[in-house]
Amino acid sequence: MEQLPEVTDPRIIDGRKIAQEIEARVKKDVEGFVSEMGVKPVLATILVGEHPPSKLYVKLKHWACKRVGIISEDHKFPSEVAQDEIIKLIDTLNVRPEIHGILVQLPLPKHIDERVVMMHIAPEKDVDGFNPLNMGKMLIGHEGLVPCTPKGIVLALSLFNIDPQGKEVVVVGHSNVVGKPAAIMLLNRNATVRICHVFTKDLKSHTRDADILIVAAGVRGLIKCDMVKEGAVVFDVGITWFDEKVYGDVDFEDVLPKVKLISPVPGGVGPMTIAILMEHTVTAAKKQLKLL
Ligand code: GUN
View 1 (spheres, rainbow, N blue to C red):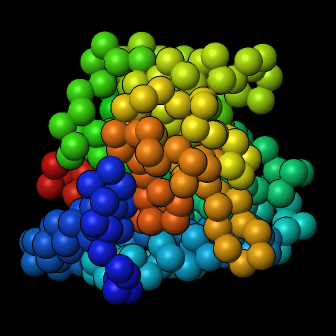
View 2: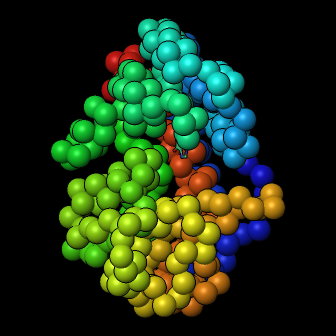
């Protein structure tokens, strides 16, 4: 992993450091898997179109695979591809025993129904946790392969000894990738959870109550100081690209003096998401080969 300045402010969650720790563990796990099974875990990624951030994220995922000893297969389609073509590829990957994880990078072009695509990924290979069976299991409290970003948030909370039980959690954004699963996973841990979104009337009246605030709206600088409770724990999951730079949903400088903990953008939940994806790929491989 590239060398970056160390985060010294104890209020800032160093997602890169946490990711390195997860990856070190996964790398050892991969070594054990290889010596036992004689094969490496394999992750297949599917990228549709030329969306620059998606291309970057997929590249970062392939780099992470290389670091931990996972083989990655790179599948790409042009943006005009028919939904059936993607599903045909998924069907092929589903039945290839040497493939342990399948990831379709989101968002997909408008003419493709992401939900239908996710439904076709074999649940045991669904390392992103987006298949409705894995989502449904999560909903009833059986967390197996769950979405990676919310899992990173839950992990960070435990690393900082913050128990969500009884806490006021406010999630801003109701996507299937972050908002909804984050809300469910915190609810599974007995938090009191509110989900706000683009149609919420008075956002501030909700966010101000949050002991734990998770923001995944995709609106640069949406959350200002006056919208945050003193001593809150804030996870910024928003990503906006502007002028080749990446910005979060939280006005970091404005909010920092008020928080107990905050995950920055970049260097917060992003690297953790990728590290957890690696973990899921090894777990999926072990389960498929009956090691778990
Ligand atoms: N797009 C934004 N976040 C994610 C993610 O965690 N997984 C996939 N597949 N696509 C994404």
